[in-house]
Image (cartoon, rainbow, N blue to C red; front, side, top):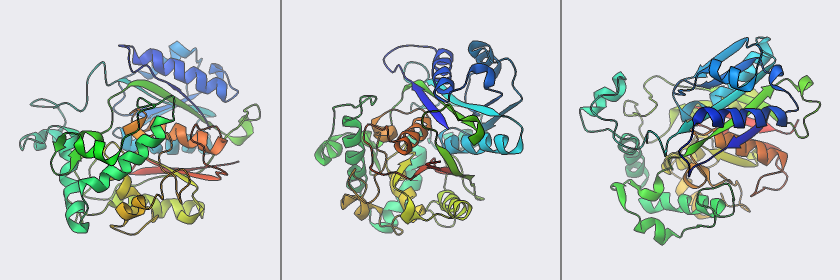
Length: 370
């Protein structure tokens, strides 16, 4: 696997040009040329046309394409789709990409309006649940109630993420760390669950990765192996409205992902050196840490408070700053950071990384040294 990113958060730009720029860089980083690519994978919400990208990159022929359901939840599922295509023989080299204008274009964090055209969203609009922050906060509130978690507990994760972002030149919040007092002073978005600094950014940019077989990467300076890739959605869960489960204080999709990933790879939580976790809202980092067994149910807040997720801690988490600190490219930049950590080229490099977990909530991968 090879990866590259293109991001222009301060410019009103064109997602097509960014996916071409990032795609071409990823292809060359893999030691390949556009004519080697014969598969494409992105998300169902991506508005860029595959054939347009084929023309823009000069790819002569595509044999396979697929899209993972939803948005950031499916970031790691794109790797599963690409790896499946490679192992089945449906494609030889697959380009994964995601690009959008979420800051200068349509701002997803704003109210959707009276109708979205999507039945689940339209149903909840009736009750005034018209932004992602409102949608997720209802779920997080039960977790807080069950385990006595406060917004300040979420803030300790945010402070750690911003500490990483402050030393990452690619991060929007580069050189801008915060304290817990700064977090607590930020305005409420959904009281008493989410403050402004608990919410991810809205970014312009693009990220691309290439997945191919081990036999094809002889010219790649530092390839990264996909040790495992899984996806799991249990009955009753939703991409945004997790209100219909018997236990609302946990995260069953992530729990099932963890179980499948440990079974598939033969690894355990103790063998993970660094974790990159999709967190469009800060509570998700806590829920995923618990789901994967890095700590017990309801213990993530105290786990973070000990410094466990810091660069010199037991499990460094979101070493690029996460979606809250670096950028929000629907979790694809989280995958990119996992690649860099295994390669040993990350800005906030963890020493001796053998296995990096990347979680996009209902999908997950483990990246490893070949």
